[in-house]
Length: 187
Image (cartoon, rainbow, N blue to C red):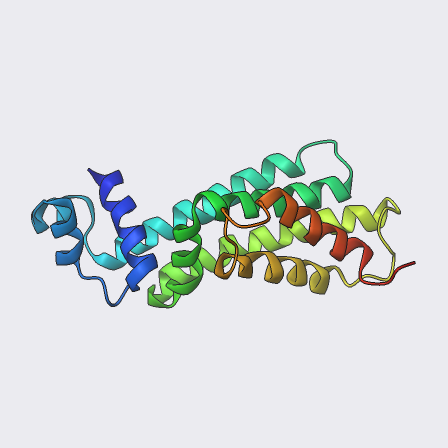
């Protein structure tokens, strides 16, 4: 039942927003009582935190696996971008809830999420720095800014990316990486 509550809540928070969705809305859609909800969660915010933790922990674990490979830095960056896009494709509402509803977490919960989000960015920095150190990427890059630019572009795609659209997540990832590594100049 806990998984059902989380699944239904992700859909409702994604569609209607956290503040516009009540515990009563959640339990009514499941056909259960508030007691069932409170058996698993102390509050709606605790439920939101669970959704946030699952989202970021899953991304961090996948990123860790990518960074541990012997692939080139370019391949690692592509794999991270593709992994995020694939995650958005498979869990679009979770991404929407993660980015849009974070503001409803208390300070303690936000600190935990920010720490994990910062770790994801630092891991991205590491992949870029390795590419610089190996000569794969330009020496004059500002690792922090490049990392933020990549993550900003990819994370924002939850707003517009349509997995049933003209381009799938693999094609979009390829375009992103090509643009990020090669820019707009023809030569």
